[in-house]
Image 1 (tube, helix red, strand yellow):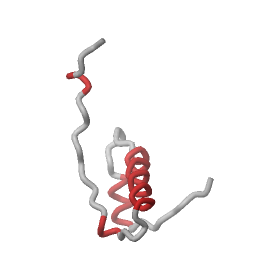
Image 2 (cartoon, one colour):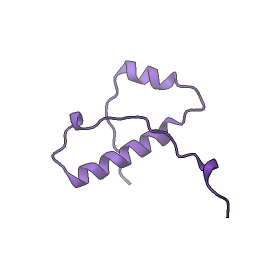
Image 3 (cartoon, one colour):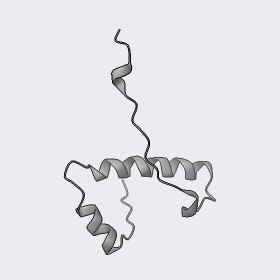
Image 4 (cartoon, rainbow, N blue to C red):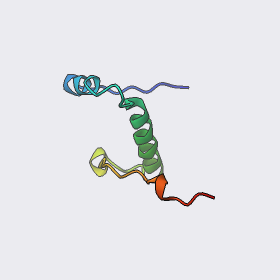
Length: 67
């Protein structure tokens, strides 16, 4: 499997390192990259300006009826 790299500026790198230990940065990046690739597969003409990262609420599983 090929590894892809992209430069990250020093300020961003320091902010990533300062995240609390409970934040699993790699899991967030894996999800973001998966969505990014899927969108580029649909439309390869997209530019970085076409992407906006937002926070969505997680579905609350406690409201589900148990079977």
